[in-house]
Length: 442
Image 1: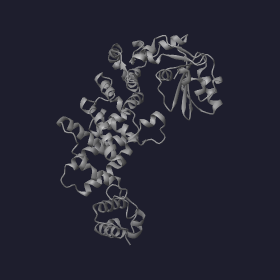
Image 2 (image 1 turned 90 degrees about the vertical axis):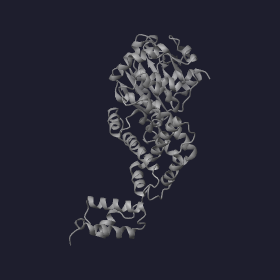
Image 3 (image 1 turned 90 degrees about the horizontal axis):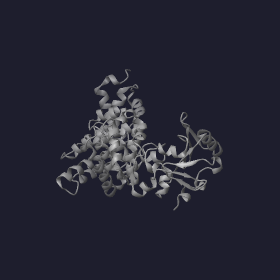
Image 4 (image 1 turned 30 degrees about the horizontal axis):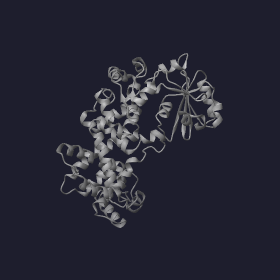
């Protein structure tokens, strides 16, 4: 398939007549077209010698599409369509060739002029595409935007390329420059790597080359061993308990779309534990510094708190129902991830012992069955009495005592000592009579 058939104006979500004849496609869309890589979501990057934002606004208005001003000073804007985005940027320098010279890697410095069906490749990027090599254009280009250092590993992982040795050496030397990059931008680049199991070796390479030392100082060879183990555990659970494994690929953020959605699944979010301290408090500090959302922090810290508890309970000959109840309640919807990490730890240890089958899997299955049972009083307790019914029946005033009483009833229900609303009310009366101050006088 030719680049013309992939990037021809007929494939765009807007008419070519909205663009000046001088517009060129550049960057990843050209690279991917030359590699015959296709995605469901079209991502176009145009460079124009003038009026880039004005052109983007005209396209947006003519197609009734979303318009985002990305950088007013550098004249960059984005138009958002249902299944595509188109970025419009002002050409840097006096010519297209000069613009390409200022980019990061040769494979990203290839342009395509759609109106004449011409490929512009002054840096021989197509040769590096054929060789499967990521080669820098100049060290100063990487230094201008140090995020390009991380991008090398992400793109090498995505494309199955290697990084040219001199390029990798320069990246190592420029690593201190990452201190000046916004945490959010670093997080996005790492998210791409963690959302793809094929990228795991490159995450380890990032750590070896020192690119994680500032953002994730607690990452280590031991913690990074979690990554392949988590992938292996997820695969094993998919085979053994597919109903549980469906949770791994559910999106944590319903508003996320396209690439962002893949980075916000339970599985990809759980993988961040490989870069963090195993101390949940310290991990939370790092996550906040790296601008993680409250939802992401909630998931990751619950997993870090949950899996050591589950591992400990699995080792007990007789596990109390109350301990099971509290683990389910504390883990909540992250329980599948807690199971996955617990199994990953076992897989890491078994590889050291030379064992083939994780010994904890049979012990995990009753827990998993309990969680998958929507009627389980342990994993998904349904209140036998509501707070309002409790206050009405026992003449209680609103307050924290009612919440405490409901918690005691839920625990009794989980232990199996009460199973009906009548039994719950009787127990509540007994509890209230032992603490008469909770009831209203008269």
